[in-house]
Image (cartoon, rainbow, N blue to C red; front, side, top):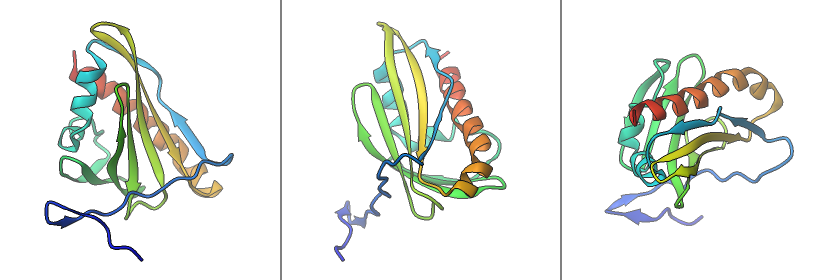
Length: 155
């Protein structure tokens, strides 16, 4: 097994990989108009220290660095994430251990005008049917709260 890469003297844990399949749980937030540019939003989201400002009260044990974080969603699970990919209108965040299942959190931004864009947050998770049934509503609520809090950050 290969050793994980070393960045700044620290071993970096690889993100969990998701292979899309037809039974994957897909959750999408309600799209929201945000009065700022996609660049401002992506700059904000590209630092996990900023994510704590978006989290609902059910999130506890928040820990973050600029490029990774971990937290507990009350009565659910402990999740950990790392930035996987950043484009001009999209940020993909991937799960890492100790998350109970692989997932990707995707923030997609569509420019409406020079200083306005529409934000949609998607969660793609590879979880068994039983877990998906129990987690779908709380996760739907979670992505909607994230998107709404993101809008409030730029009011």
